[in-house]
Length: 112
Length: 113
Image 1: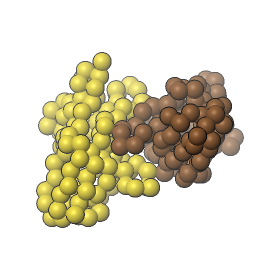
Image 2: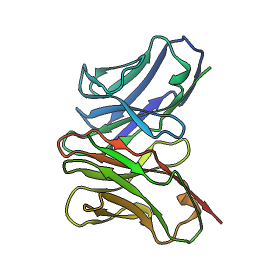
Image 3: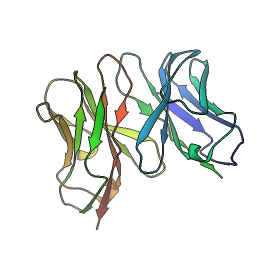
Image 4: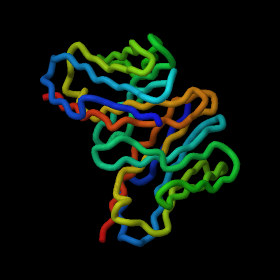
């Protein structure tokens, strides 16, 4: 069966520090991968999605970036965090022929 | 472009009472519709989906939803809720041609004893 992992589960970082969040999927190959951010009371916002290694589409301009160095690994990064980057970050995957997305457990990021 | 509106940000209800969580969408093309549930500090879990066919869709945990094309709605219902249904519920839409999901703002369901 397929599983999706995210780490770390929680993170507290000062303003201006770098960020790296990792997401890995097991049990499938060549998935579509997605990064969402969930701010309090504001629903889910799609940040990036990827249909293959090295292929990243950005949905919202911001100081975050994403990379997909391996087929089942998706990384969310920032060089300098802002207070507004605080939130709950969710990674998701889908099979290319399906419209269902499967979500990871999330990372709670607090920028202080 | 598609958009999703969840009409209620919070819905308090007593245990064993029926509940309806409302969702309206806007789109100029056909869409696929989904309901997800999120328990505190967890990821999202798919409750049910409408792709085509019968407009009444049954999902997990006793939930069902009805697709109404004329009213562009996809309301979620449960005839009798439990304390364990307390969670946030998200309606989402995607186009058949692409897999990106557009989410509503969420509805917080609070079930009280």
